[in-house]
Image 1 (cartoon, one colour):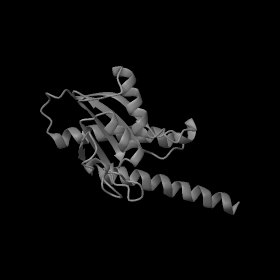
Image 2: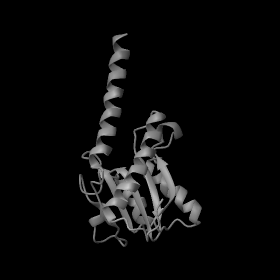
Image 3: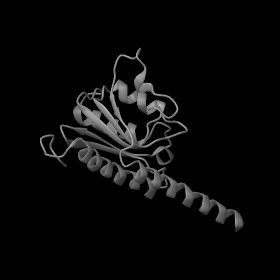
Image 4: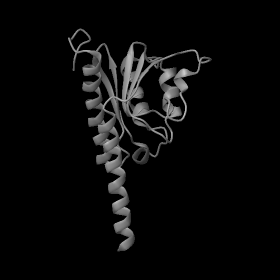
Length: 168
């Protein structure tokens, strides 16, 4: 983990944190969940992590971003997280984007775009709604290929397993 005073430029810093988010995504995969990982960074230090858990938790809100936000809010003793950044391997959905804005995050960085439910520009951009009272800096496409490949591999394996079950 690096302090904000380290000589890393923004892109190298973003890559470092996205790699850590990818590690969280692997935790989700190991549990049979869609491999999405997230982390919250404050002052250059990871303070909370999360990965997808809606299946295991029986909770439709247990997305990686929400899990990381909950952990960060608990740690800091406040649902508002000013000065914090959230890194996530997949473009956030509307629910997660709304939670991020409500938390007053300074910045959101995502990896792969989500053409089906992405709320950061792929389907709509919640962060560009001028009427909303908080505006978060948004950066997308960090390690997009690696993040997207992980998801593609997960779903390819899942389809193969289903096909094998049907043929038995």
